[in-house]
Length: 140
Length: 140
DNA sequence: TCGAACTAGTTCAGAACTGTACCACTTGGA
DNA sequence: TCCAAGTGGTACAGTTCTGAACTAGTTCGA
Image (cartoon, each protein chain N blue to C red):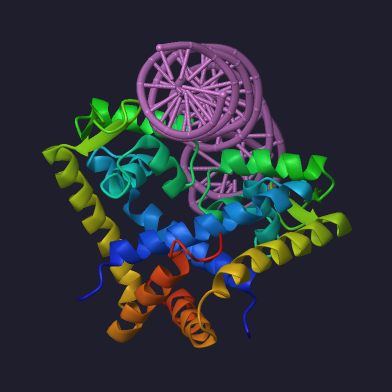
């Protein structure tokens, strides 16, 4: 490899940070802190606090905080899970879905400004490879 | 476009987070919190607190904290800048360089473990695409 | 030479985050 | 049925982070 993996990681991280920073103001207008946005974005795929914590690699206690904020803002609500009474199933409200979609759009716009510099085929490739790298089976 | 940029951002972010998390214990053994590692890694290219803050997209007050810690650990020292007496030129000590290099190695290893799960051809592709996205010229 | 406007860096108080301890419910074996 | 071990979620207190205000040094025009 011509480029060190650590360098690739670092540059990539910088890219994502700059992109996120570029749209954090728009997220704030939607009433979302960036951490809350991550939770809002993931809740459909991981509708329980414990699952959110492992998926997003953040502490359970932090998830409690973000969920509390998102509930207070009317973006989601907790429901008791019929299958396991210990669990809180998290459900997006209509406002929550709308906010999430607008937030995704803002992030997409910010990232698109960067992605515009590479061919569409590469974007598809990138997505395919990233998905492969994140497959549940990959590494442990 | 066929691929959602927000999804790409999210996948990519997840990948970097998981990789960083995988080597955070090793960084801790070197005496580095992850935020401190970012500072240590960047200080050669951005040897002033203000420059570090903009390069790493973190608040000035936070840089003060991380630099203080890194100085206390003997990884760097502050020197008065001859050209501008307001500035603190940050200089890595030998221990600092050694720690940085070992930290980079740990990060590279962790990332490589992930990259090993996909075909070599995809790794080359991924590297090519990311490098294209990270070109200094891209966007502004 | 002066001082007003900047810029670099720090301090500190309050905000944000999270490790730990905890309670509630579930599971599985006796 | 019982209870010990395990999992889900939260509360709280201690830690970390950071906005705002501040000090130090610089620049520049009159």
